[in-house]
Length: 433
Image (tube, rainbow, N blue to C red; front, top):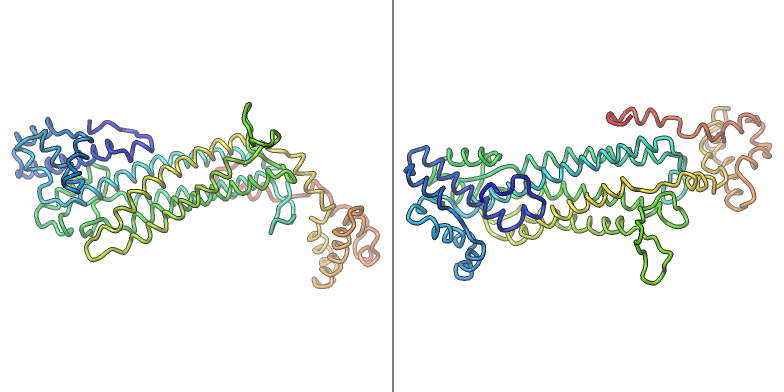
């Protein structure tokens, strides 16, 4: 019963059965440690290990009277074990099992999230390689800037996901601590060896210093890492939402057979997954802020953090697990439209090459200010007149052709020379080909 979930799903980690199983495991391990020290007779330990059980419904029934979950749990276990239960929870405080269990739950959840992040990283890498040279327009302030590639968008997200992996690994390490140190963390009634034994068996490290609780900066670090991952997923989602706009349509979410986009308009294909991810990211940020608020407690402990954590920890882990599952599938099945990318790039009729013209003029010896003013004059004409292009304007501009030949102007607008350093940028991302 104690070892029931060797590789739980995210939801199971935060169910009562898993929680109470972990409580029981910690209590039995503490008895084992004290037995090794000669404090618990071996025959009593055998009885405890054989008989120790719990019943969730019975615990909740007892808690109606005690108004204390740990006491209700211990009372229920004692009903199964009998007189030998006097050894259980000896010298411990409630938070010894509450906080050690919560750390174990967060560590287990974090490991699941890490495995999902690796999947996302791999999908992003594959897409980056697939669209490495698929040219599209780059945008700043939502306005056409200069050409980039779709592969570089994926590469950017890939690198950010790698950083998120590092952040989450650090956060999992920070939260992977336990305590079995008594009422105010001073080991007054049991040996530190008990804590060391229990934590080692649980795959945790003893908190170097604790009070009645493990300090909440660790939990805040974990939930902040989750919120940052959520922010990255939102970043990807917002880009996809923009690219799916009818006026843009450079990429869109996969629309499955039989899927419906609107109850009123049969033609609709909406970016519903991206919008869902965007909304859920807001919950993660709110929960992270609540975790930061939990860091400051009165003296050696109060319980102002407890009610908050019962919501924000499972919710954040489950939400992010769900978001990662959505995003992995979304990125892997994203529909890309390279032709639309080229069409959109050409909408401004060569304006995206304005900086190249500027720099070529500077090379000819005129000042940057003069060159900027010259190019902007003709760029503004192109913005105003949809029947012309920047190349046409420059070829007919005597104040430009006195510096640049026709061949030089033609070379500036050569589509084959767009994004010449894509390979170099990719080479700096070790795992991208």
